[in-house]
Amino acid sequence: QVQLVESGGGLVQPGDSLRLSCAASGGTLGMYSMAWFRQAPGKERDFVAAITGSGESTYYADSVKGRFIISRDNAKNSLYLQMNSLKPADTALYYCTADLILRLPARASDFDCWGQGTQVTVSP
Image 1 (cartoon, one colour):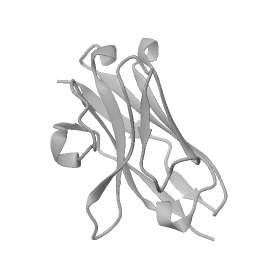
Image 2 (cartoon, helix red, strand yellow):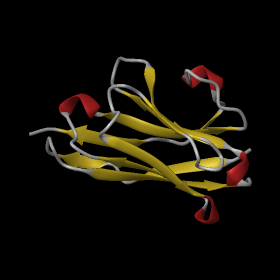
Image 3 (cartoon, one colour):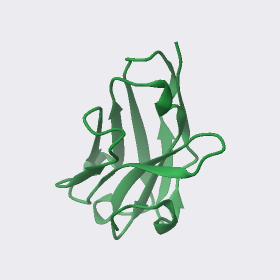
């Protein structure tokens, strides 16, 4: 099973940008579709964005469409999330996840492999 480690979170102001990274090990990353989810305190883990194994297709939650960009570099075993025009509503713990099959709409219960998360806080 692939192991995932997220990084790149932090405290930023509204309108700022952040780039999250997810380093994968223990598997051939190109075989896996990958996704980002986020979870705010007291809320469910929500889908943010997903990308197929080849990187040809991407999918986004309506709340981040046009502001976030998901990408991957299979040669570096890495997944990324470029987050622009950040809002306080984007504050959450961000997780990356992977699975051999991407089901849409993507739900957290469909994925078995998770990283530990990286905190993103957007505050004036």
